[in-house]
Each structure stands twice: as structure tokens, then as C-alpha cells.
Image 1 (cartoon, each protein chain N blue to C red):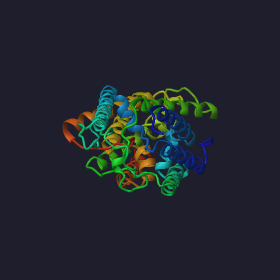
Image 2 (image 1 turned 180 degrees about the vertical axis):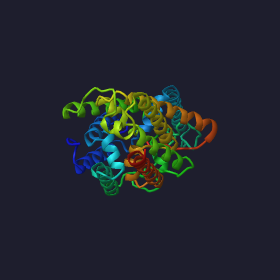
Image 3 (image 1 turned 45 degrees about the vertical axis):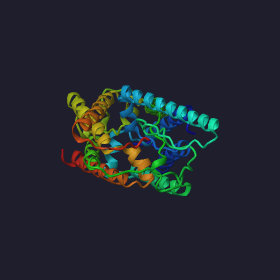
Image 4 (image 1 turned 135 degrees about the vertical axis):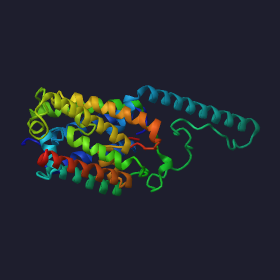
Length: 218
Length: 138
């Protein structure tokens, strides 16, 4: 179908999005992860609150240690803080961050706030809407297009069932594998993470096999 | 750029750009997707693969922080389920959102399926699998 970007523009666009996010936030983004956290927002909010409380506790302990040290003229010494739910509040600020280190797992900044994950999903919708409207492709319809009709089914009931089942497989599978085409495919493969390379190879190969079945057999 | 507001802004910009880009590449178009997976048209495949190559080079040059990732027992079964679902429904988790934004109303059913699948996975993992699946979105 005409009107879509040439491959190099698509590659540049996807790469820019991913690189920009990594450089500005020092994190990876993942749409399935965002879905997961937004859908379990009650639990996530509770964890965030607990994390904030632990951060406050740490600040309190630090302030008490500093005041004690000042009073007695000694060094603050070691103190213990209970582990935080996300494990994010304990990284000593004074430690140099191994930004370029291969073994930088301890410097993981922890999950992005829940609201940012919800914003990501809403923004994907808005970005898609802007693209559809500006390119003239926006068209309200009750089917999935001629390709789906031809390759999968033209029956609306079968279509609804298959879309739902397909959606369940996507949701379950991405979370079981720990990521999707954005998290594993772009961010993970971009960082050459072995788990992402394996996951991307497997989900892509499976999608190829199933697509050939739909095209040639079913 | 670690503050809450800055992260929020980064996610909004990323979401807008990602939705705009994948829609313009054609990932929301089922026919285009099937042509990619059956190698009839390499345009979208090259978009994705080209992006990965650019990102690998850029991350290596810019020394972007590597995140750990352990291959656990859920990776391969999960990826097989995801690949099957993607080929059937035409949606990886971002795509049904873009499809709805392009006017494909039945993609709302895909979104409903995705939400059920995600909730089911967290429930099943807590009850049966007990896998530390990690998260790509940290």
C-alpha cells in the first residue's frame, strides 16, 4: 500500500525515538511493561507510596546520623536501612555511577513513575491519531481492513474471537517473556541484551511461521 | 533528567513520536504486517532491522548504560505466544492503540484481549510460575 514511509525513514524514526529516550532518561521504555503497570495501578501505587516512605526514612536516618556526628564530633558511621519495595532508595549518592560500565546493574534507577507509563500509552494513541489524520488514512471502520478479511476471516464474530484470543496471547506472552517489540526488540536488542536477542528471534520466527500458515495454508 | 516532571515529558514525547512513527511505517495495517512476516515486502522489516542496527551503533558510541537481562524459563514460551498472537491479531502491545487511533474499531477487542492476557500472566506467575521475569520498561 502506498503512502507509508520508506524503510530508511522508518528505521531513522524508530532509532531516534529509542536513542532520545535512552539519552534523556538513562532508561529503556517498553509498551507491554507500561500496560502491565497501568493495569495493576492499585498495587503499583501502593509500591510507589511505600518506596517514597522508605526514601523519607533514609533521609531521616541520614539527618539523625549527621546531627549525632556533629554533636559528638565523630563521623556518622554505618547505619542500616530496611530494604525498599523497589530497592531504589538505597543507592548511596556518593558512589560514582558506573554509567559506561558493563556491570551497571546496581545503578538501575528503578521503575518509572506510574503516571509516566500511563502518559506513554495515551501519547502513543495521540501520535497514531496525528499520523492517521495528517496522512489521510483515518477512516472509522468496523473491520480490520481487506488484508485481515482475505487472510484470516471476513466473518465479524470469528474476527472478534480471533482478535480477542490474539490479544490475550500478546498480553500473556509479552509479560511472560518480559518484553515486547519495543522493550526487547528496540531497547533490548539495541543494548545487545542476550535475553532480548533470544526473545526477539523467537517471537519474530513464530510470527513468520504463523503468518505463512495464514497466507498459504489456512 | 531524572525528575518526575522530566520523565513525564520524555514519555509524552516518546509516546507521540512512537505512535506517529509506527503508524506511518504501516505496522497498524494487517496486510502490510503479513507481507512483512512472509517476506513479500521487506520495507517494514528493514525499518525495524535498520532501527536496531542504528541503535546498537549509537548506544555503543555513546556508551549507553547496559541493563542486565537474565534468560529465564518464561522467555521462549512467552515469545512463542506473543509471536502467535501478533501474527493473528496484528497487534504487539502498542499497535492496537495505533489501530484504534487510525479508525480500526475492532482493535478495541485486541486491546481488551491484551489487558486480560497481561492480568492473567501476573496472576499465573504469582500462583504457578514464580518467575522473576524482569521488565524491559525500567
